[in-house]
Length: 292
Ligand SMILES: NC(=O)c1ccc[n+]([C@@H]2O[C@H](COP(=O)([O-])OP(=O)(O)OC[C@H]3O[C@@H](n4cnc5c(N)ncnc54)[C@H](OP(=O)(O)O)[C@@H]3O)[C@@H](O)[C@H]2O)c1
Image (cartoon, rainbow, N blue to C red):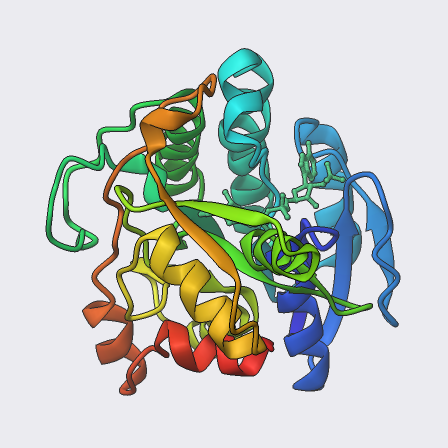
């Protein structure tokens, strides 16, 4: 299969590229600012330009496109909503429309932040979205534009993405921050009033490619089976890494002032993806054992 990975310089896109190359797929990467340096053809792209996206997709003529490109800085989206919508909604549509024009299968990635966070049980794919910040608004608009622009897309909603950034393999995201503080012996303040289902980038990449290979369509939650607070997540990280005396302290989302509101509860129900692939999603503990 000829796969074009858009956003290959990012955490998830890098993992999708790495897993697809391991599976001997014919991979072409598209990055935004820095070429990630995989051993495959690579192109620079700004998905806000429909012309650039069309030219690239026509040139590559892929069987499938996995779109991992997004403006993911949640506070940055709040202060620059125009750019958030240009990338997360317009850009998503450009990629979907171009994929459709060459009959390529599309995997588009979205977020748990399409939900308000006011529930107390895991969100299913059919739960009503109600984003509370520009990032979630722009990603929800992107989902809808993708559904209009492509005849049969697969949309994967992820939560709290972390992992190793290929090809060099450095740890990225929340675990990198926790481990750095633990190494220095610093206090590690972690929220006890937020719950998420962390999506390990490598496991997520494998799941996305499995969904692609089995020709699944529609919307799927792709996350771990675990529903944890950042405090619990941090506790598992330092335990797995062997820091016996790490100074975890309980804190609240209200303790810090940020531009964008965050949802308090965005655990995702993974039953649909488990049924589609006929196997359970991994737990956070399993994913951390692999990461560390
Ligand atoms: N990170 C999370 O916790 C999280 C949670 C839920 C869902 N998601 C979703 O998961 C997907 C992957 O996210 P990630 O964690 O891998 O994020 P990431 O590491 O920030 O990667 C996003 C990539 O998109 C690229 N990009 C930004 N603007 C672009 C543009 N105009 N044209 C082309 N590419 C552009 C970025 O390139 P530059 O850096 O070079 O600009 C970056 O390489 C996204 O759809 C995101 O919304 C993420």
